[in-house]
Length: 167
Image 1 (cartoon, rainbow, N blue to C red):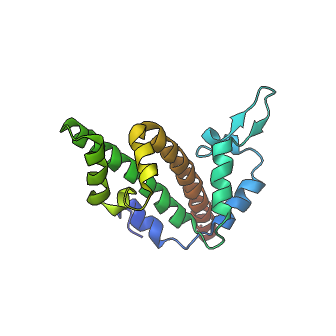
Image 2 (cartoon, rainbow, N blue to C red):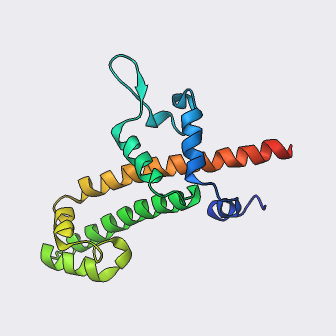
């Protein structure tokens, strides 16, 4: 594998890592707060007990729903969510700066790109999003970042096993 190949190309060449392997790894980890990728996903309560915050628990629950899901697919879903949030924010900022009224803005967004989510969602969701895009997309980005870190950790574990076996 070429060392200068783009990261996603290199990751795509790795054997598929089922999310079930990631979930099993997380169950085996005695101290996920000592892992550089997972440390930020562990909360400490008032008594000093470590646990998963509700957002992390919700992402893990979502990942468990699809037994066929791979870490690479979860990684791509996370990157897509972050990308869509970034593009939506940039498009809305430009259209608002151009003075487009809210209803026209919504129609324009629905027509621009189906991947931004406006065409697929209900008009009520789109109106709620337009009323407070920061809150709506910040929550999406948060869950995508958790998914991204988990997916990378699962893939890294598989790569580490392959490297350890080959050396």
